[in-house]
View 1 (cartoon, each protein chain N blue to C red):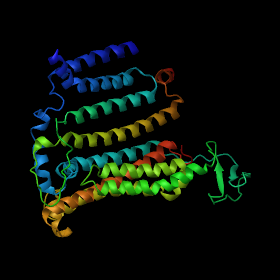
View 2 (cartoon, each protein chain N blue to C red; view 1 turned 135 degrees about the vertical axis):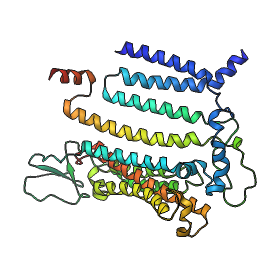
View 3 (spheres, chains in turn purple, yellow; view 1 turned 90 degrees about the horizontal axis):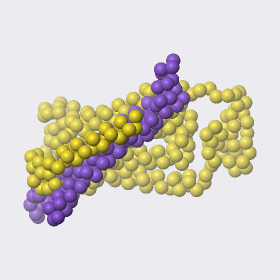
View 4 (tube, each protein chain N blue to C red; view 1 turned 60 degrees about the vertical axis):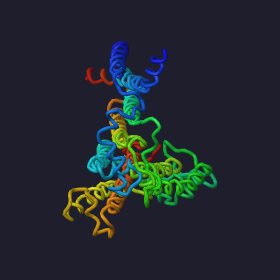
Length: 131
Length: 276
């Protein structure tokens, strides 16, 4: 019983992010409204960002900012004491890219609306096939 | 379609959960993500760059190429929205309606009449007209300078606390968008026109790439800020810290301008006549 609990505690963050990812993926596939698909894409990107950031955590470690930076360093800097800064850096890029794609996706949705008069995927398909 | 989607998603989720059984535990110190390069970044960033915030040092110095192209990506997003959406203003119908704010009188101006230019006494009524709200306008007018000041603090203090160019740039853009929401889009565009925001976003990217070029012209590698030491008058470690500050300012400028530009184009669907 103890091993099961310790196993679940060490892995449940991955399962939570996988569930979020799958919610986003389902929204992208199965919803018919274009804006709901865009929201699903945003949920998916958020889940990926959380997954990467959580993979950089370390037990009993603090933020990756060194206190008393300038001047003397009274204590040596050990890598065990600070959480991994690399996933944070990569995910800054990912957040910026997700904002950019969200902006362009919304602009495309506005153009689709002006062209077809609707944002529902099946009505757009019937208009394209009917013409 | 929904049933197929649900089955696919459930199968995919189960496969991913099965794959996650092999992952390192949460918070494991010996995980592969924390053992190859990141101890070097943690231990050496302050003696290489004199910047206590390791995330800013890695973002703007060790991985500076990546951040430069990321700034270019956000500039390209602003450009793409501009090219997709921008249209000419439709010549509306013959008359325009203006409302005198203090008395509530509505004036109708036909073609060829003089249009009141003073937006503090007359407001234009469109199909999307919202009433003049004193509480919202005054509150936002009082709060916006403090938001901008805080954003500048976030950019400037990115070396010592969480922050930096992207975060500060977004807060600056949000302050201008708050101004556009509380007043109207026309007032905001009179202060920051679209041409200024486009030029500022390009200037931000240019500042970042230009810093790299100056390093190249001074004889070192592209984006190697220690070559800026004779120009800035400090030793080569402090000049890396100053170089990081310069590129963060460039990034903040570009992000702010693109946020404003995106808001102008998306909220008015390209016509720039009336926002949200």
